[in-house]
Image 1 (cartoon, helix red, strand yellow):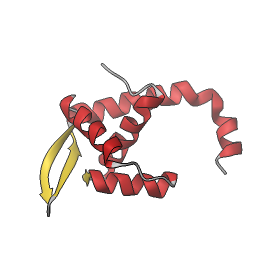
Image 2: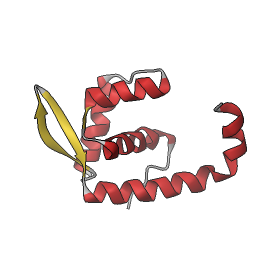
Image 3: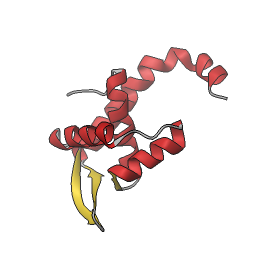
Image 4: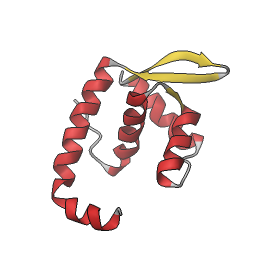
Length: 104
């Protein structure tokens, strides 16, 4: 099974995490990332990630809200998110003190 283990995969991890909380469109995901990180990813960044996650079967299109396509997490996506979360924690567990200092 593939994991979101690299920094390149971190955006995929974030997108899966956000969609796991509620069904979202690409625009809503971009807005949420902007709220959390201060920078809004461009459509050229978000939509290839959504396409890749959809191709892998981690998310699926659930129709439209107006003219906006929405996505939901699949069972396979839930398993991937759980595994990726465990791996993320294992990778960064020893950095807890640094996170506390820089993430106040």
